[in-house]
Length: 171
Image (cartoon, rainbow, N blue to C red; front, side, top):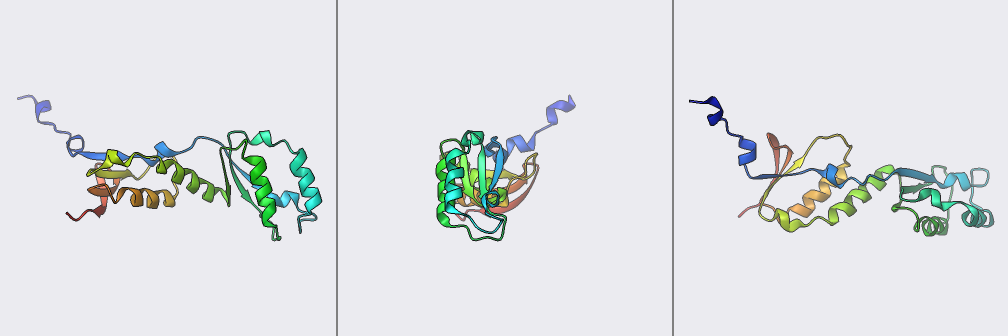
């Protein structure tokens, strides 16, 4: 008897669907625009100076980039200043958010996952891949769990050969 005939790939035969969140990673560059660079003496934003900067700055340097807009200085920045930045960045940037790179990454994943055809997971047993080469924000795991719960039979976390049960639908 050939020993090869008795080898069964239990993972392949399990019917599990592996969902790798790395597939929803947006490859575009991530940059931070810190409005503190526009503050007068690092304390306040002067409208006239800021509007002039907005008018003359080369916004095309943000083409295709994902931009996180922050103010790292302890200063009061009027809301309209962030709005003006968004208006100038919008024609060029892939994504613009208010907040740091962590907020940007969460928004990118959330938008990408919103496009998932959930019908492909209907009544399936799904493993959310747990480790990889990219740093996936925890918010992405929460979001995908929320999206999948209404349609799947079960959700597990990890690798098909070693999973942690997370959710099982009560039939």
